[in-house]
Length: 221
Ligand SMILES: N[C@@H](CCC(=O)N[C@@H](CS)C(=O)NCC(=O)O)C(=O)O
Image (cartoon, rainbow, N blue to C red; front, top):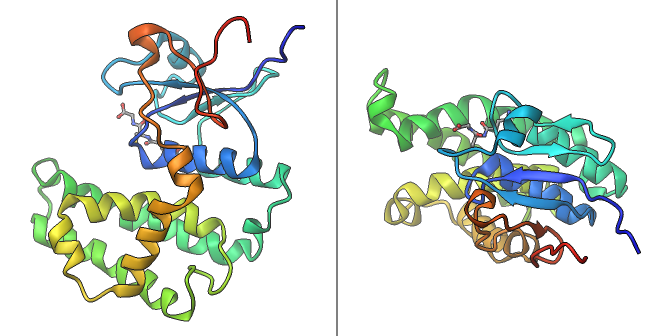
């Protein structure tokens, strides 16, 4: 029997945007054919679909393309009628700070030599402002919106993970227990572990993976 064509996702394991898209699709139970890329060597087909050359790049079975991680998440969770989309406005407000000023400070902190407008310390201090905001939210419960997980948790955690990993000892030494606990819970969550196998790059040996099972896709289905 011919298998229906899965949507195609070009992804990069460590990219927080790609991670966010994989999480949304996984949590919605939507399978895709995952092709792992390296940012220094992007497949021609991906660049045809998305000339900007960013991951995630998702091609639906009908040919349409979306390369915005947040839109992919919301689309997927809508399909699944997921209650992660409850209180969406509050989630989007936090995500916009994450994707705007926090991401800028995070990049400055990670790559200070490319962001000489401020010192590494200043970039880190600016990024810390957002961490403090999240920490204050997390004093009301284990999730950013209190007792229930929401879009915000899954959309933001990949970026806080990156922030924490720049200097683990420094992050772990902060007096931000609720945030540190939230990040640990995220890293141990089923969804995170399922979207993080060490996929081999598509250009290296043509391997393609099912996002939901993590197994390689072979031509005979
Ligand atoms: N607006 C995009 C941004 C995605 C993005 O910037 N991804 C980075 C990797 S984390 C990328 O692909 N950069 C291209 C490159 O470095 O060549 C989204 O939210 O999905």
